[in-house]
Image 1: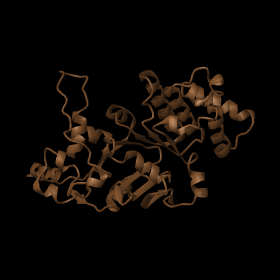
Image 2 (image 1 turned 30 degrees about the vertical axis):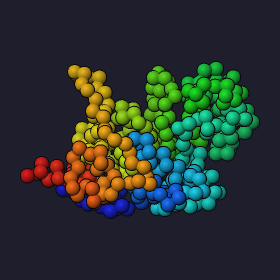
Image 3 (image 1 turned 120 degrees about the vertical axis):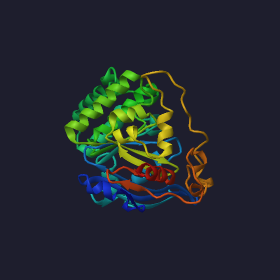
Image 4 (image 1 turned 90 degrees about the vertical axis):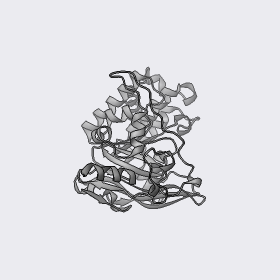
Length: 341
């Protein structure tokens, strides 16, 4: 049985079958200069859950969370709702958001070079989080900052506290950002490509660290990544984004075992396999459309191998299966119906 949903009710089946969510996003939309960049995003994150967000560059993954935390530029027009334990964050005043950002919700930026202040020592930048959100002072700040640096694998941690960002490598600055995000002991950590600049060994250590913290504290994690393998090993659920919308959401096992949207199938088909015979990778033809030049109907239709006539005139709504697997695809509807016959 498949249940069609509108924009806001799309997360209702998930909410009914899950613990009370820590954070909900309902019909979140963002416009820049009259151009829609996000088009009605619905998501929910429960306590202790790891949610993966995947999709090509330009899908709206990072913008979703920058909008949720009020970190977009003033020329952004934001509508919809973002609630943390029932408290509304969209258009909340700065005083309220300052209590949320860094303490309740922390974010590991995709680009540490622009996120870190170049004229402040990195230890001081982590220390500001410890002072503001955990009330530490004096020697306690330095001791805790050193512990966090050691935790994320920074060598010679005590000396690194006095370094400036330009004195560290890109990978070391990334670890400083992770330490700063963990410093406030957040309820929800948003990790935007957190291991991009790290080698494979350090990447594994950081992911193990985040998994341990989740187990010990109940912290929720949102992992934004292009690496499907990384997401599959880390996350409980996966949300697939395309052209500013969520187009499929399910448990990780279901996404990899039975993807319903052609775009999700395309992403999985482009991942190299390290088991069995070596096969040719199948790329997704074309590009993600520019927000100002969105095609009519389904935004993926021009690239979709299963497109039908209706796909080019009607934008599909999210539908949810009885198992809680949601997808937005008219072609997938036809396939499901044919399977039932």
